[in-house]
Image (tube, rainbow, N blue to C red; front, side):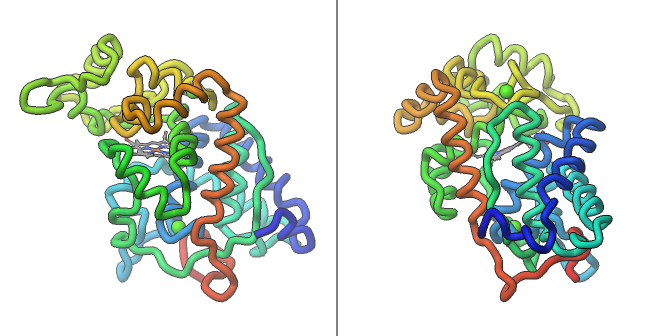
Length: 303
Ligand code: HEM
Ligand SMILES: [Ca+2]
Ligand SMILES: [Ca+2]
């Protein structure tokens, strides 16, 4: 990977992608969290190779149709499709930039649009040649995971506990569905109904927003305070028992990760630095070359 991978073939790649991303976000802010999550789900399954973008065919059930990916919002995919379209309109860039790199650039751009830190993006990923729903199983974290489980999954991708905590702060933006938290607010275990690590008032608000028989597809802000701003309020929320998922709240409950949560709740610059480091490392996971990848003409289908 290098920062100037396309300096000869498509020197304006960064500007073209950024313009397309800005245009899409103006139409719908949902594109911001959707793109960020799409990048994570891509990198953790078969590396950052746009395997998550492949559409299923009659012969192949692709990654995006695994249950863990079903809730990926369409606007994230559309960000990449629109940026690719803009690149293809430029004769020198046409079919030169990988979908994996477009997604990586677009992710940086949406973080910046939401008020997060900017950073240089390494480029030169090739697009993967395989995408199966089966390969998703067990590779993405679940909302009920504890710190041991989260650390194990991130370690598999050469990411540290600090990286895991910094990346979890992506939940400073975006939505989740009521179905994902019913257990925390109604049937925590045999003897108590509400997760005791949940802030009492926040638990009440969640019960109001997600009544028992509500459609599990109803959406909630993951950061109840600044849902549209990329900031360290995520960590301040955890200190107050306002982490939406168990996997968020355990970062404060568990003594191994709590010092980091407290440090980043206090110091947003330190958090921003850690986030940039972690995103850069995430972008290096399982990168393909011209030997095991190619440049897709259509991000949703193999050439
Ligand atoms: C640490 C373990 C993680 C777990 C257990 C987890 C789980 C989830 C779940 C269950 C949702 C809600 C899905 C829904 O109900 O529709 C969600 C949303 C989201 N996740 Fe994560 N996630 C994790 C880490 C990450 C990371 C590392 C990133 C990105 C760097 C990320 C970015 C997002 C974003 C932005 C959303 C909101 C999506 C939207 O509004 O469309 N998550 N996550
Ligand atoms: Ca992938
Ligand atoms: Ca926020």
